[in-house]
Amino acid sequence: MKGAICWGVSICFVLSIESCKTDPNLNPEDPYSFQIPNGWPKARYNFENNPVSQVGFELGKKLFFDKRLSRDNTISCGSCHQPFSAFAQIGHDISHGVEDRLGTRNSPPLFNLNWHPSFFWDGGVNHLEVQPINPIQNPLEMDENFTNIIAKLNLDTDYKSRFSTVYGNDSITTPRILKALAQFMGLLISHQSKYDKYKQGDASFTASEISGYTVFQNNCASCHKEPLFSDFSLRNNGLKPSAVNDSGRAHITLNPADLYKFKVPSLRNLKYTTPYMHDGRFSSLEQVLDHYATGIHSSATLDPLLMNGIQLSSQQRSDLLVFLQTLDDEAFIKDKRFQEK
Amino acid sequence: MKKLLSLTMLLLLIFAYGCKRKDDPKPNVPTAPSLKLSFKNFVGNDTLSLNNEWYQNANGDSFSVTMYKYYISNIVLTKDDGSQFIDTNGYYLINSTDAASKVIDIKNITAGNYTKIQFLVGVDSLRNVSGAQTGALDPFFGMFWDWNSGYIMAKLEGNSPQSPNLSKQFVYHVGGFTGENNVLKTIQLTLPQKATVVSNSSSIIEIKSDVLEWFKTPTTISINSFPGAMNGGKPAKTISDNYADMFTITSVITSME
Image (tube, rainbow over all chains, first blue to last red; front, side, top):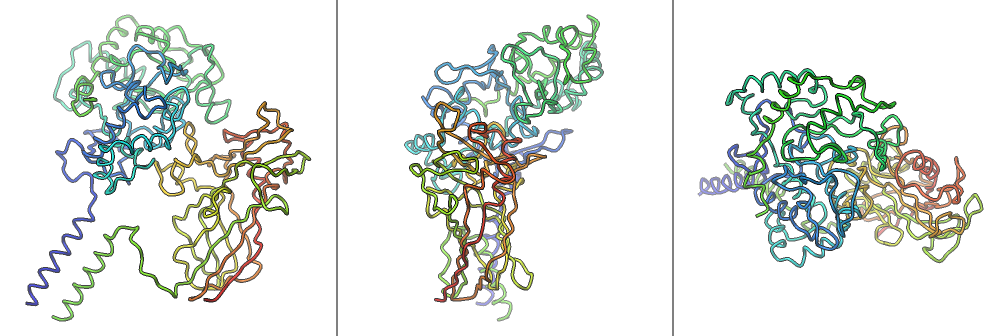
């Protein structure tokens, strides 16, 4: 008898341990767990306090593509961050907010965000979970507030049931919305380009790709650091200020030493993310390389590495462009998990 | 065997407790000591009255107040024996339009004779960089800067005929948690008399905040030349330096049950 009680007690004991577990990385084969690709550095965001799961990811995806997150229900996150454009908006120097309002900056692509120490072109936002507050509340973008969003979502029984599944009850709150969005955005990992396969020994480079890689390493890699192809620093890369006169990082720090500095973008998925630069002023990579060759605008905050621009022979230039194509990740933009429907 | 059985039962109980949802109601323990901080908002000697009351600042500007909010966190209470009670994870948003928000019930306060109190006006830097927060720190409350991450530690908004804005408003949103313009202020106050926190008693420490202090010492602020602070930096720092001395303890009341 005593033995039976002991067994019962032990089973309850084990069960109660089991129910306390929240390890998101229990199953390495789970496509909805967070895996750091081989050879990549540690991530900044590891879903601490936000254990990632398929249901959480799916809730985040629904929110990401939901136009009710904008004031007049016309714009979703996905309007300006489209899967086939590596979650940028192809062909738009700047994107349209509600009522076709226009901002001043190019919609950046979204991938490998868990490695970013800061967000937005000026690095003003310090954490993936609080990133969406900005476009949602910005009058030029979605122009909405969380009071309204929560009211709208509460009318939708599917949301009630999804929040309940993910969080244990159907209360819809701002932090829950933000954490679900972070689950979707954080799993947008682009790591299946030809370059990645080459680094893993699963693909070989052509002669042109190899020499382009060398050109890249000698001329670009100090800012566009492998394997994420950005060091995520904020630098003035010599773009002449436009009529908008966007002060960049100085808008955040109020420090003149940060004038015209913008976050170094990744070079992954360039094929899908035209146009380029913080204001989308260049529509082709040729124009970008022309800028670095002859277009550098000198100013007090110009990055010292660009004082003399980047001078390449025409062979180096064409090899570099061939190498950059190895960073395009078609598997990423076609990944079924990331599509709206 | 009996011993083993009671040990396993005890372990089971501990685990069951550990997995319990945090918001489960705790059984009522009538003897637990209680300590509350009651924040009273003033303008000089007058109780703050929103919207329709007119006041005068040190510069002679006439003003009314339409919004007054501030975060209180990192509360530390010191006993007469030098030991301390730390209110871990306590973040409170004092909102002048919400009576309940102005009374902080210190959870799990331990018995003792408390002589000093320390708190932060604002939200410590760690919570400014840790993603989506809950409770009083929920971004829902509009106290979080969305384009330049970080909490607005304190807000004062109102109207003044001296304001150069067409709307005649002034708006002070004080934030910024790094570098030379860090606005976080640690307030240390000695209680005018001991707060004796024991079983079967409840103590209330009344803390006055004085809006007039926002406008003076060390910098006298003219609403005409300084109608707004919305983006951190030097303006926010100036105001926080001013309001650092706005708190005083007006009374300590202990009543036995």
